[in-house]
Picture (cartoon, helix red, strand yellow):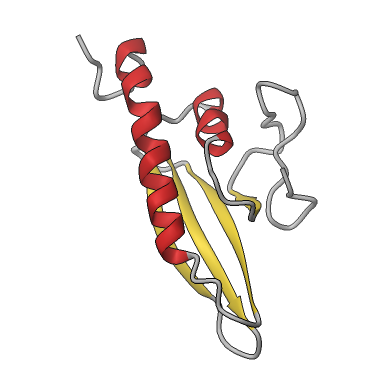
Length: 123
């Protein structure tokens, strides 16, 4: 039986991973307009309130104008191993920045720390 409250059922996770990656790539593609004189990044936020999840945005930085942040997806499975697999499935070569992660958070595959937006945050 699927545990929708904790998203811990292995079968649910196996089925959800490609769906999250597909949705994310479609929405990043729509938000990434490739406008001249505009820089882009993908921001991943660890949302710690209930329910815990990861929120993902595409940020556009047009020269001389305000930043535009577009929400593209929320990942309900709050697990770093799962998040790492989703991020590895992103097809766009944009800088990724992180916010809201604990200082002790590390990537499961490498053991490297996840450094928040105010530090060295390129993965």
